[in-house]
Length: 85
Image: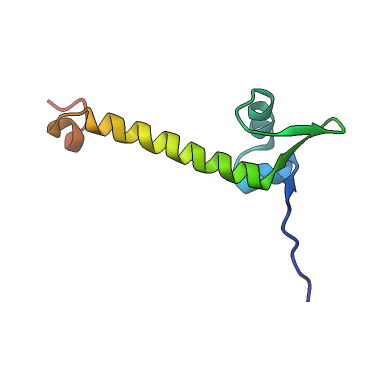
């Protein structure tokens, strides 16, 4: 039986597959500091544990902004959109 080894560190293609993104997108975000990573031997690497924390932080950041915008709407906007007539 072949056992799958869980990776502790991802390369760009591996992280792209894990996140469902294109490799070029992962590279651009890493270079821009928007995805936490580091270079080893000139190649980008991403710790899985760090990426999982980053994902949780992204979820919290985006869910809070949605809650704030929902709370700031009046009842008509909440249920019919902000462009309701």
